[in-house]
Length: 156
Image (cartoon, rainbow, N blue to C red):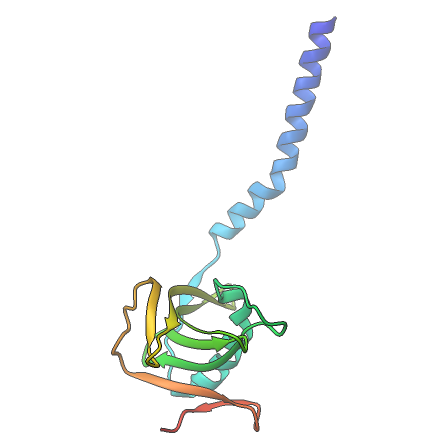
């Protein structure tokens, strides 16, 4: 009798466990079907992409912000005819830079960090993580203009 009760409880536990896993298994199947589409951008796409990427910076940055306002993107340099960009950002205490690849997944803009940089004392950037595979490539620079509240091409 005691043996039968233990076996029954184990069977009930296994059934409940299997039922509990069903939603996770079902979602895993759905996620396998999601599509990742590369975005090849042109100059006309850069201002709207800059807005979206700058809004994502607090979630993209591998370094947590020290300031209360979080990270603020200041300059975005798009690799021409590609789907990667350098973002320079600050929390008013420290400045950082990252190289990311952006893409659409299930209709939503996503980004993956490929490399991170810290400033050097000479105004450059020192690689901290990843590979800077776009060093020296043709870039299109955009800066945030606080007066117009827009991303505009950088004028040198």
